[in-house]
Image (tube, rainbow, N blue to C red; front, side, top):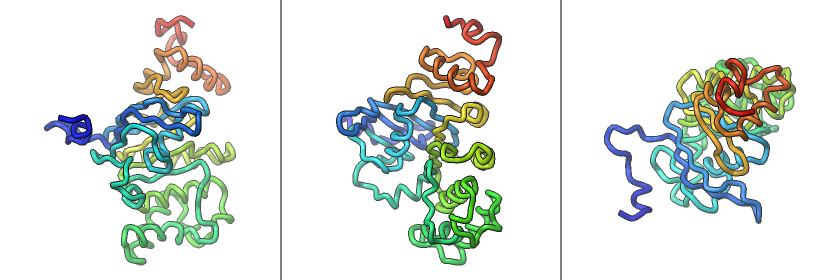
Length: 278
């Protein structure tokens, strides 16, 4: 069997089809190699947090998965179908994947309700009545039903991000990608957005969360992936990554991120409890 035929073959009997599968992904901007052969599999229903320093390739990987960036080499599959080529349109991807960006990307001239109903009507083919009913349910879910007639400029940053989450959910995606969804918010507004994401995580939706919120990643994730310099350096359960990471670079990153919070690796005494040298 050729390599291309093997890459698109269905999973063996009894195996669960991954929701996301990234194989040997390469992406560069000019001479800068941002992703250097990254491979990652996310089963359906798993919540994966991707952490790492700025410039490590986290956001670029997410943008490649939802076709916001064209890849240089590699393969991307969503539910077993290869989507990095020209066989699938961006509309096809929008039906599968919802993405939340650092900036809210709401239409400023439209009301909250119109922001939520535009794509379901035009892409999903819902009637206006169906789209409005669905949107009201989602606004209630994120605690903003009373803001349905407001414009984005009349909302706080946290409210705008919750509207953006509701808008993504209005397309009924199977996968949600979050690209540092709280990085543009005032510290006081971070919690309200994280609460909505945590609620989604508890609902069983497949999610990839790119975040610098270490405590949140530890609490909400099934798995944590650490990236640096365009590579996945380490991945594992939150208990493993935050208590006893194997890679020295992971330990250094977490020490720097957790120290301002007055936190350290859980366990007896950090590296000593893990058997790692400091």
